[in-house]
Image (cartoon, rainbow, N blue to C red; front, side, top):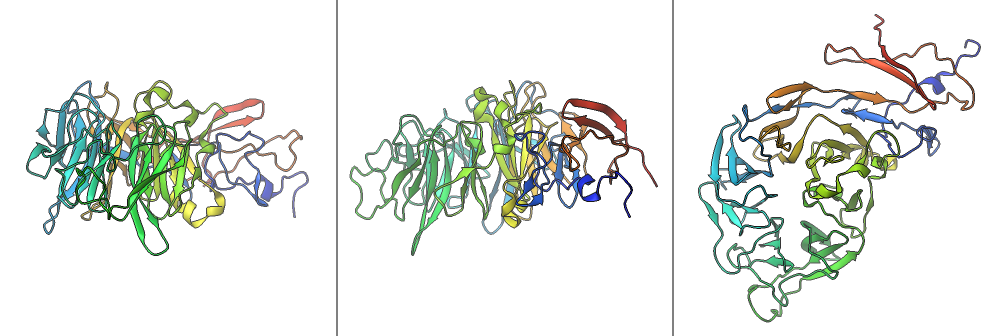
Length: 481
């Protein structure tokens, strides 16, 4: 039996936000039906995710107990795994002129203080030599084997603009001439502006990023890379990249090639190119969107449209275009995390998280994003997931705070470490506008029932909006036992 004029339960109940946020849709369209099924989008999930329920994201803690350096920020971060049959690892960061090792206890060991000051720094481990390589657009390629820090010496040692990558039995990197490669299994012989061994772009402009990529052919694997310009991306493939890259003529057996795939979609954000296993390669485009190149495909598409805001909450359209090089993406524990410098910020001040589990298990839902995640100011973010480790780390991006290193997404922690201070995580969940089955009819909402589980002693509040704006603000939620 139902009471007269009572809104039916199926219309009055807010669906779980299984579709994440949508900053692009109008208020009227937020609660659209998805293929005949009522949608589950939210307007805002600040510092919240949906994982078996709507809940707060986890916070962060300090790895470094005190500031390492004032008025500086972390310019690169990496976990170096090495040692062969006796594996070990070292956490490396770059800041100021330094490359340092940071222990789990927060102790710093400076490996060198001879780098050019305050440059974006890229790290890459190559298992063939059991070394990590460091590039920063200005200094000749450096390496560290866990004992000795050195400038790589040999033939045509490059200045790597965005660090190195590994393809088959050699390394590659971006230089002012194009993309250079090594001889097989060595780091001390490189091509240099070669007529055949240097990959060059088909369009004007330098390469901005390079990332490993494999293409499956009819009967073989083609190991190569995706190379990007600010506008456009290429595929580099081959089964033989030549035994002597300093040779004037191309070896007969060499079969590598570079092919322009799209002349319009590229990136200005080399830290934003990230692989999600089983899904594909993502990057943040120069036109302020997120692009996905699916695994095994050479054609991709945009997946960030819902983050382009038409409402008061700022989205990726407000990324600081003067700091596009500081956008980063990192995959960790079923979420692809996107960090952007918002407004006039020169470091990541807002994050949005893509639910990879939803993308794989429910592809019909499309991309499911959560956020904005605020309260962290990270210039770099990297995963540490080998040798039995399972950790996400990040470096402080605000020079006013100074150099700190953090452990991120710490289970059951609901504060963020920012410098020497721990800040509470502020969660805001904003539901879509509900028409209750009659969009034009004036409603008198007498009560709202919520099911909440609080992890802290804070008091939640509710604000009520209609299409004209705010109706009631900051109403305290009362518990009914």
